[in-house]
Each structure stands twice: as C-alpha cells, then as structure tokens.
Image 1 (cartoon, rainbow, N blue to C red):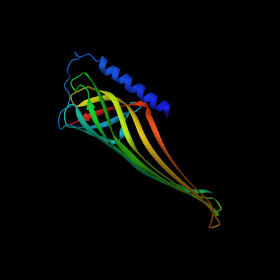
Image 2 (cartoon, rainbow, N blue to C red):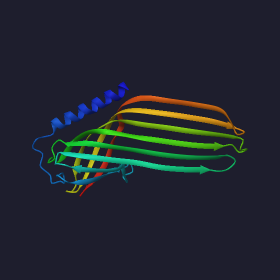
Image 3 (cartoon, one colour):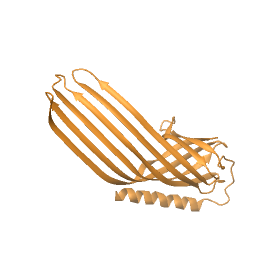
Image 4 (cartoon, rainbow, N blue to C red):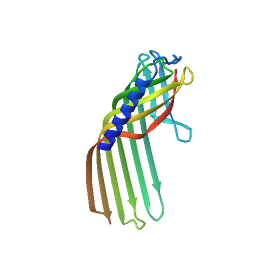
Length: 217
C-alpha cells in the first residue's frame, strides 16, 4: 500500500514539474475545447488497434477549461461445458465513473489536464460443477463491490480540430468488499459449506499510462 502511495505522489510531482516547465510562448492551436462540445474516447491498444477506453466513455465541455467525463462498462457472460463432467458459469460485471476534468491551458500545443471523481462497480459470479457420475456437485458464488475516488493526470494533443490523441495516468483510492460461498453436495445432501468475506482499502495507480484517441462533435 505504501509503495502505491509513494508511486502516485512521485507521478503527481513529475507532472507538476512538467506543467511548470511548459513554455509560456507555446503557439496556440485550434481545437474543439469549447462550451457545449461533446467527445467520445477510445483506447489505443498495444497493437495499435482501437478499443473501448474504459467501457463507453463520453465527455461534455462546459468551457474550454472545464469538462465532465462519464464512463460505463458492463458485461454479462454465460458458459457451459459438457463431457464426463459438466460446469456452468454465469458472470455479470458493472462499473461506472464520473470525473471532473480541468485543462491547464486549452490553447497550448500540448494540453495538460487533471481530474478526479467517484467511481464504483459490482461483480457477480456463479458456477455449478457436476462430476461424471452425477453424485457430487459443487456450487460456488462470488460477490464483490467497490467504490472510491479516481484520480487522473495526462496530456492531450489535437491532430486536427476534432481529433485528439492523449495519454493519462490513473490513480485510485478504493474500498473493496468481497464474499465467497462454496457448497459441496454428495448424493443430494449438503456435506460441506465454506463462506468467507474480505474488506480492504486500495491506494495507488493502475501501473501504466492509458493511451487513447478522442473524437469531438
């Protein structure tokens, strides 16, 4: 935990030094950072393919300096395997965040931005496995939820008036709660049940810079 905090503080200090070092004579560049502007964010993956940024991500500018960015990510998965033994798996995941984003100098060639806001999500997984003889069944349920504050800091560069490239470092302060239940059934009777839960705080960053592209309209 201490390493994560020190790393986040180090990155923040480095970004602050970068902002102070930006020349005041940087040429102004035409962009779409104006009141009422909307944009969508997409992630640039390691193989330079376009993917979702953090789920569906949209940003609304209230001025050239101030904006709110909303992100929503969700998935529902089900799978089933058959053979001598069978296993059924169901998983649902939901996460959202709302960030206030502030641009340091909207008319710079390279724009430094920072932001913060709440985020949270839930995760639910259920699985059922049956042995080949059908005499033993194992049921497992995993539940978790998390909530906290997201911190971001990065830079944005407009390739055209409506298209920008950006990179950001993402930090977090998160409270996590997880519960697990595992039940073993033998010949139709419950023979074993194990339940556990875990609560913890997480501090730090995601460990890498998130690169993306935004389309303004």
